[in-house]
Length: 281
Image 1 (cartoon, one colour):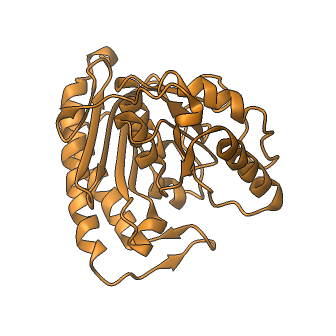
Image 2: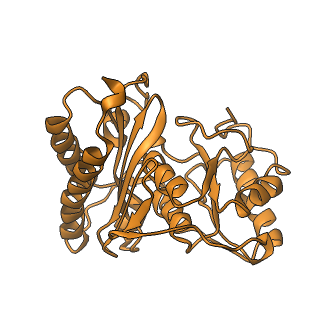
Image 3: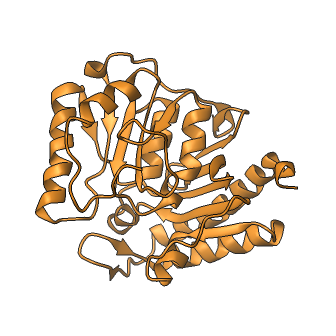
């Protein structure tokens, strides 16, 4: 009955869950920030756990046969991803942009994605601070707050605004690779942005406020599965930064409009990945 998964119903449920979690984030946004340090750059908050539990609870009640993979539950299992099967599997980042949350920098969001046969099919990304809710179902287009969105029409990389992230690894070889890619973008694109949220960067591409985005070494599939559907349904391209097909668990992604994605790939593949970075599939 796998083919009979009602994607529209999944999207509605995901949006309800994202909005419920968004209420928690918004409430905590104005409260005292009690920060637990997890490494020096990666910060986590109590809101994270609370929101994941809430989303899992809401979706599990509705879809008891589906599998669930969440950032917090994976962290609790020492960072080990469970085996990803072909059945409907939800990927949830209850609070993408935790460092932003801690600093009250308004690019934090709830990221929810559903994959079937390891392919992203439903995505919801909700930023409760800007009140932007991005949603998409495979073959049904993408929306922002209910209105259809599409990628930009910028065709020349030299006029493109590109998003990326500086990540959390600080070993010299990784920093060199990150900065090599940044330099390649500075030399070849119009300008560069780091908003601090992989999902917000990706939906930024989907609605045209960014022309391209790439990141190597983000937290996990929960950051990108939902947003990947939103980008492709908005007419964009999602692939591995090497130009190979997008791999759900590779912790590597590149996306852009159909002109910018290949141009960006070409510029970035000239820069060797760091030895400690997640490798191309």
